[in-house]
Image (cartoon, rainbow over all chains, first blue to last red; front, side):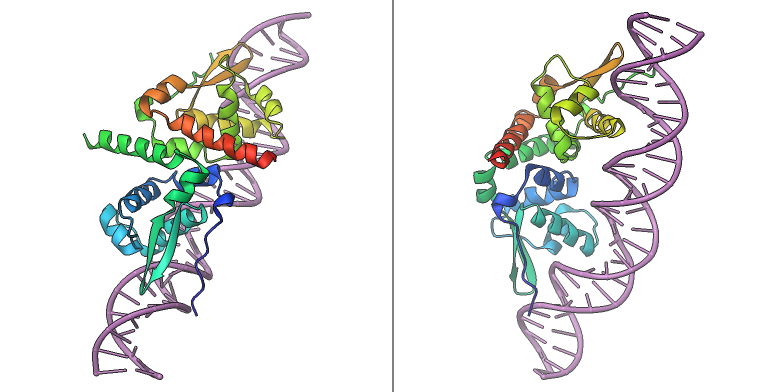
Length: 114
Length: 114
DNA sequence: CCCAATAGTTCAGTAATATTGAACTATGGA
DNA sequence: TCCATAGTTCAATATTACTGAACTATTGGG
């Protein structure tokens, strides 16, 4: 039997934990992408979409950090693991926080593209 | 002559940098306190206000990290160094970001106090 | 079933960051 | 000039992150 995937209770999620998880540009990119794909996305597909060369162990660790911070939830779908942002729960716990961070992230990204 | 205190240009401030700087509960507390004291506050006074036992070298490093992330600006006032949040600049660069983070931080703090 | 292929996790060695006591620098006043 | 106060820098230690290699999980084919 597989080891179950665990997620922190939303009440145990902390601001500092969220900020730490999102303080890495790669993880910001992952969350940003995940929000655009409500159906969820696995690690391998994410690596391709982000166009960042990254060993799968590194991707796995990024997902783990996001999961432990309470930002994403993962579930097994056959061979792969599908993850999505815990958007509704996070919004209830910290209204506007995630949206504000991603808004700033997108502003920064659009500026860099120029 | 004293080595001048340097601050990053607001255009060089990054979201990931801000989140990293604020991913430490002590630094979140420092910024929160500084926002309430527009006149600025030095390291020693901050340590007392936060009621956190902390060596001055640690406090100095926290201030350095906040400064390098572009969150605070420091200026010498006689013997001590006064720091304040670069609120207006940050608001222009990333509208709503800092306010949103601190709002969530306060919500969390008030819940813990119960 | 058992094997192969795919997806991801865990481990362990290495690298990068953080913490903090001690020594050093800066400033103002006696 | 000397002292007291405030903060920075250094260096040793500790913590955390990165990643190749080995391992586990799931599905489909023979």
